Image 1 (cartoon, rainbow, N blue to C red):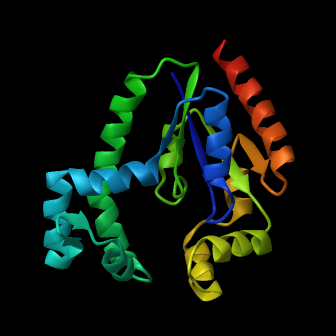
Image 2: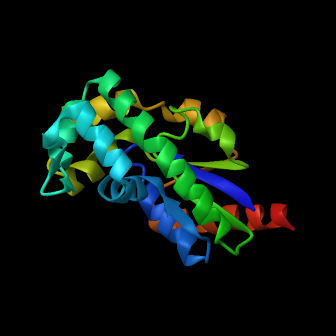
Length: 195
């Protein structure tokens, strides 16, 4: 089974691109979504996060996301500790998920594929990119946030040039029709590699 990593900076449109691949019948694993589910489901993760951040980490047995976001925002040490608890569980969940798939290849969408050195675990990497102004515009529409917060997140992620250098495919996500065309081309190439 070929495993393809799909990544891109915040606001680049990874989710849009992931949905386009899914529409072509490619099984897609969204690491962030699965991590959130596991943080609510896994007793081990819950216990460890409460040990790390205190009882406020969960409210009525549900992950207190605003509290956690506050604890890890601009705190690299807390972010690292939280990732050390969550990422291994997501990795083993992903392995089990892959074993159930019947397709030429699967995609794992992850925002921090390069930053946490996980890119080495994939057969191919697709990076989604878009101009910075467009990314900021998308994020301001989607979330109640500030340009400062968005730029702080962007600073914690590798820049596009660095990601593109280590990627097998790059999808420039500015215009949806053009993005669809690039997804189809990339899909065709990967399917050819599997034959």
